[in-house]
Length: 220
Image (cartoon, rainbow, N blue to C red; front, side, top):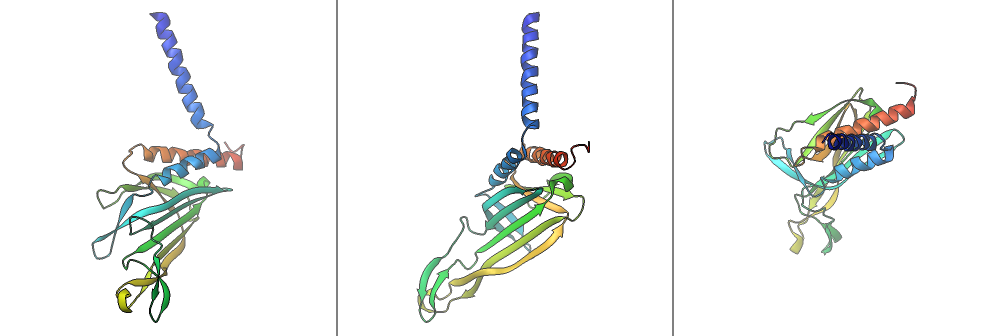
């Protein structure tokens, strides 16, 4: 019985040691690939966005990625108000010429933010006022407003009044956006898996530690 207990203890300690070692030895590339996998889990899912009139718009995620260039981590998401990304269909509009026709209510948004993970101060859950969100947000607070954020919105700008295309919309183009520096970064994730927040947080802090050690190996 004693030998069985000792053997079981050795197996458990070995498993724990291997698990910890495996996590601790992930490279920068492997860590970024993991974060990229996590952010891509939102593809096809929706998030509700509150409007000033008290209603909400539903945005579906089309693209998402995480990339590292030097010490700059870039998060990218693309979303829109249709279930699938819409490219419009090409049609000949009398007296106008060829145009791409889009649903009149269709909007696309892209969000790109780049920051140095060494500047991470804290990582928390972003709390939403809208219940039932499928896609949540991890809030990354930086030590200073050093993140570069770029937001672009695109939608239709013209309605046709020509024959069979009367009332349909065209001229899909950029209509607004924002470019700024900020100390707050949002990382999209699937809320259905309640372990996702901790996994993403651990991966970000691990990447921070790797970059810190690379930048100043004797700093610790």
